[in-house]
Length: 315
Image (cartoon, rainbow, N blue to C red; front, side, top):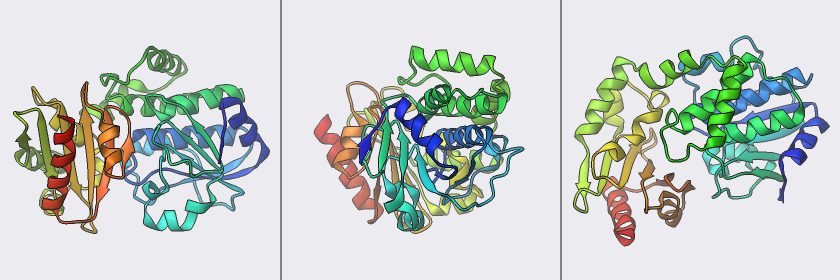
């Protein structure tokens, strides 16, 4: 593995003509916005690429790939975007691609350094790093690329409300807005528009919330049965993990989501002085100071007990 900077990354991208771009499973706005911003940039450079994800990409993101050809090609190299660990590609993709990642572009400082080349910056979103690479390449940022970058910025900062929102994020957002990002519709789609099935799921999830440590920790559980009853799916619940932390007095908010195979995905959101990445790191996961995650393959009671033990140590 070789750590590289933005300039070296741009040089690498110029060397080859055909790329496979991978996003992480349960794709969100940052991994998809970053991936399609990169693909559109490579298209303008006369290169060929396509974006793949092990899980379905929700139709609300369809504007990211509108008007472009994202069909499978014969690729020279593989790029992973916003993927801190090959296991985040999903089991089948990890087996298929995990040992052959040529380049990883990421913003998670818990990155496992699995790629041959790693561009890693401690930024609010992978879209920030992608924006820097596009600028270094000297490619014109079209309205479509601008919308892709804006999507990554807005979703990973909670519409610029999370603590990871920096002056740099605002400056980049302003630049891509000036370059034609459809920010009004993107904000509406990402933060205001919810399906009836999602609202039913959210109602069930909120009713599951448990309070611990004098109200400073809240744990919410989403089961497969809730998905079945509501008619919702994991593709439309990007923002649901933030709900427990929104409760007054909560310092550590945890969402436990049961996957279709019976395993559990844990999303942790914290406020100062608690470090989500540190706690999830102890459990084999990672992420950022205020937002991190980990996984379990054991009964729900064990998941909760292990989480509470880890969180209690921090209190």
